[in-house]
Length: 377
Image (tube, rainbow, N blue to C red; front, side, top):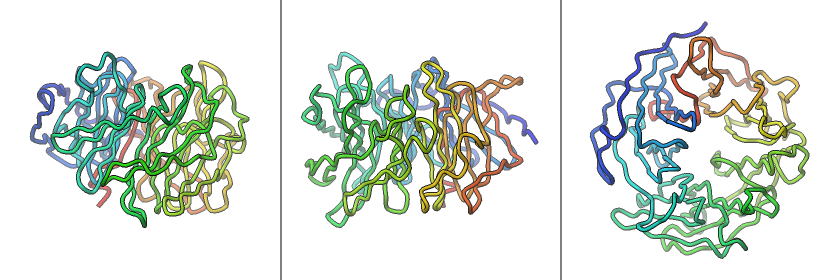
């Protein structure tokens, strides 16, 4: 059964959030189940979804840019307008904007391209900036820039995802260093940089088994999981796949390789011992996407490409989220109704997935999906 769209609220983010470093009261009138960042890479928006009746509320704004990302940390929800160097804090219950601030350095000549955000126990925000190879730490009104130039020969190790983790030695920030060449191809080992959040001192760069960690790390049961596609024009690389890093022992291993996944992994989410992943084929400028499932205990691909429950002819699956056995998958193909589907599945104990009755629809192409705080309680 296809559920009908709820009413669409076209609320400009500039009006809701005000000017730089300003705050605004939340405009939440009711809680939702999931929050979705949407973009056609020209304009962007954010939507909140309720699964039970398929209703949604959408907001668009000129300052959201063309390349948004959505991340949650310490119970807080943020939308990052990467190409605008802006961060919006959203109400975690429904995605309504609460605050807006810039993460661009004064005098910067170009966008610094923030990729992710994590909040430590003191409330400081850690933001890796991909284009200039730096890490910004926002501590109240103070800003600290940590240069990462020494971790790559070209002076930019391409920092992307960040997670804050408690370890036996204290709280640590772990930052992905993709270490791509200037043509954005992966030819050298990637690493995971460990930083003491209290002193902001760099502890060590841990070498990773796989290359080109892509998108956000997934934190699950005390470990960090990385989706590592290597290079997207090659699906036979042995140094690509799903990697698990243990913050306690500082050791890692490739659990499932790209050759077993059948393509370059672009996104990963985990429920219990089961993982769902989006993988792309190596055809240049096509990179058709498919949904696959993996049993992490046995390290086997349960539903491979040949039995994928959801496949596209281009790079069109984007956005994964899971909560209590319910999996959401974003689909960037326009439907006959002019909308874009968010598919829903049940994840079974054997790590297979089956379609649910609900099929949610959005007014713009999905990029990232996160559960709301209502589902996380």
